[in-house]
Amino acid sequence: MRLFAQRGLHGVTSHEIARGAGVASGTFYLHFADKATLYQDIVEDGASRLAATIAKSCEKPTEVAALVRAEAVAVVSFAEKNQHLVRILFGSNARITGACAEVLDCIASTFEAALERARAQGTLADELAPAPTAQALAGMTARLIHWWSQDPKRASRDQIIRSLVRLQLCGLGEKR
Image (cartoon, rainbow, N blue to C red; front, side, top):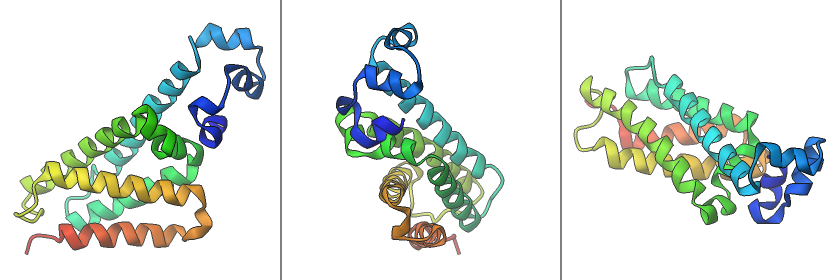
C-alpha cells in the first residue's frame, strides 16, 4: 500500500512490491495475476472497510446531529489509521483508474441508508432528498480526508471533525 500510495499504480513494478513484502517476485505471481489485480483488491477491500466503518458509526444515532458527528469521528479515525489506503482510494491515481468513483459510490450508499432512516424518523429536513444529499456528503468527506491524509499537520483531528460536522449540519439542519 505504501508504494501505491506514494507512486501510484503505474509508478510501481510487481518486483518492487514483492521486494517490499519480503518475498520473491515469483511468489507475488502465485497470489496476483499482476499489480493491477493487487491494486483493485486493495481498493475493493478498502472501500468495503471504509463503508463498514461509516455504517457502524451510523447504527445507533437517531438525531441528525448525532449521526453526523458519529460519521465524522469514524471517517477521521479511519483516515488516521489508514493514511496510505486513503491516498490510494482518493488520490489522483484513483481517479485515473476509476477507483475513486467506485469508493464514492460505496460511501454514498452508506450515507443514503442513514439519511433514509433519518427521513423515516422525521429528523431530516423535508427539502433534502437522501440520494443527492448522500452524493454531496460523500464527495465532500472524501476530498477532505484525502487532503488531510497527505499532511495531517495541516489541521488538527478536532478541526477536521468540527469542519465536517458544521458543514453537514448547515445543510442538514435538524427538522424543526
